[in-house]
Length: 318
Image (cartoon, rainbow, N blue to C red; front, side):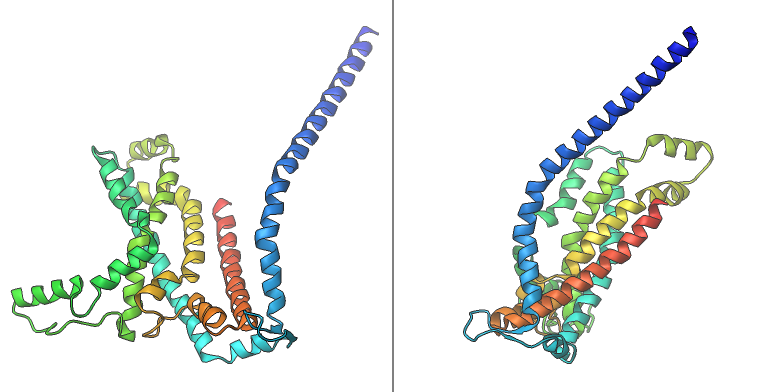
């Protein structure tokens, strides 16, 4: 009889505990929504409304300054873009810039992160040197490198011509107009972006490296693993999700790259990217309908990048 009463009390206590847990969980959820809703409302106001308005404008013929009344044209803006070789060329320039710059930045970022994470005295100096390019404003970076690539008084041509004279070579008798030739202009812009953005990747990867437990390396060393095997079988698998996140962020930023092209080449020498073409259509040509359509297409391509990377990221966690 006593055991039955004790069992009933125990069951009532367990039910009471479950009710308390559900109550506390409900309070936490309500508190979370209470804290998140203001941020969501602000994002809806400053992001959602302009995005919806831009999407509506893609189906209209209208000017940015409102000089003509808006008229509904259906999907005519999208058809015009798909038939426009300048737009298709700008998309191609953005894609080739992204697919060249981002992998190189990933490699250099990983090398910089591994070097900055190594145990040696004065590594803070190396970390400062790695971060310095990222701290420089992008417009200032573009102006500096435009001067360095100048065909008459640029530093790069000066070094090449001096090297040629020193060894009596005949490769660079005159300065190369790096930013004026279609064969070299995009490569020069990619090189500048790699110099500027590799530190950003290194920062993210360095944070990931510092979270890897030291015990894993000690165990691998005891098992006789070399440095290369420790990197390949310990560091890289654990760092893969962090690396994918860094590549996602850099891919989205690289595909929307505008500042380097605007300052260094002004879109000449077959370097106009989708973002630069978007500025030309929307601002220079005062075409709000077609410019909004370019913006939506850029957004859709960016979302496709996010989808692919998210699938890869999900696999890396499995």
